[in-house]
Length: 94
Image (cartoon, rainbow, N blue to C red; front, side, top):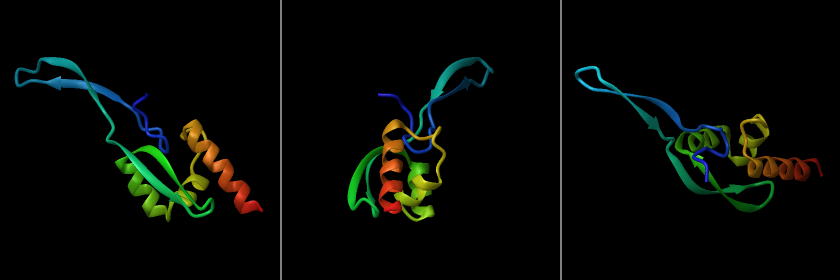
């Protein structure tokens, strides 16, 4: 399973550990991923996603999962999230 947020696309970054003597060794910065269950108002069901803590705050700020997905770009979303976005658009159009 990739260490990537399903909603924002945030992933692993790399950098250096820098010692007091300025020795540099490579390291990885891992995103703060959480397994959460979010409720979709349009679909009327809950959805399990693996998202970052930052994305969870963004979902709450935008007014829920439906509003977040409708405003998000498709290239940032995972395949699972793109399917959810498509389902939500279909329900709202009907």
